[in-house]
Length: 367
Image 1 (cartoon, rainbow, N blue to C red):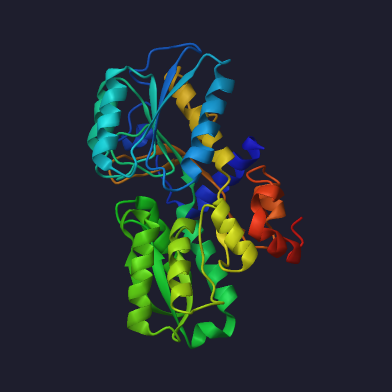
Image 2: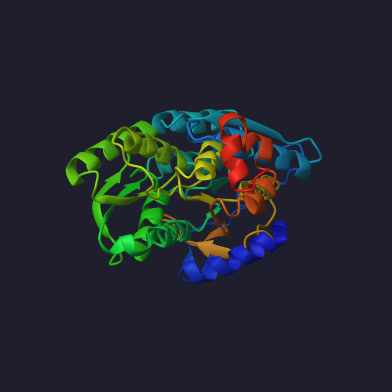
């Protein structure tokens, strides 16, 4: 399954990324194994995740990466974990601690892609390779895995237009983008605009500080006040957490039955999709992304080539031709919950349909 995912990802990369030269051709990205001594299975992997407000990091990413590292190292590899709780300075300090403790490789999901660059260089100077996970951090990154972020935005925009139908011609939407410090947020926004621009009027647009639901809620209240509740026909929300805050504001204003997008397939988001409060989310197969990150990290720690894992290259603002794998995404609506998050073992029907959600599940045949 993983090989198939990488093969598909390679196709996606070919379409979505400009062709990059090899590492040798560019001269900007040194040999990924340089400075990394040959080691066996007894390795130490540093894992730095950005925050714990979004459910995915503690529920999926961390345990999945830990499990795969164990599998790849015959149970001998150790994952040393830290969460920055949305603080870039804290994450920089965490990198320093990992360097001091002499981990063999780092997997970093950056709070702030620019602010982390100096710490990435410190790790590199200490002979510790760095895998950028989910967000493309700046600095001398050795490898990168994520999803095709512009495609995520396009998927959201296309779903919103489909839900709006003829209403797209007359009404206005509100765009609730992610944090300006997250490079992924800019790509989601770019992808969404490529679909929405010229098709629907964007009445208000926000870059939401720290992706926080309460900030999205406040922004939505401002949009309703400025535009009038009868003028808003839909909301582009870049993720599920913000969608929750947005929907709370809509309910408070007496606005119902308008489509709201999301991303991450959080349990609360899936449950809102079941009830019809949220129209869709973007399901990102975390097991595939986590497996690739673990494979990259273990290979780098052991001084091995990434050629069999990463078939493509991507450029960051500071580093050229980073070995990369992008994993495809799926538009999640009430019509394909069984074929996505349930089939992949992310949630069970009982988890989704617990308590007050049972009757809504029964209505859509989710039982």
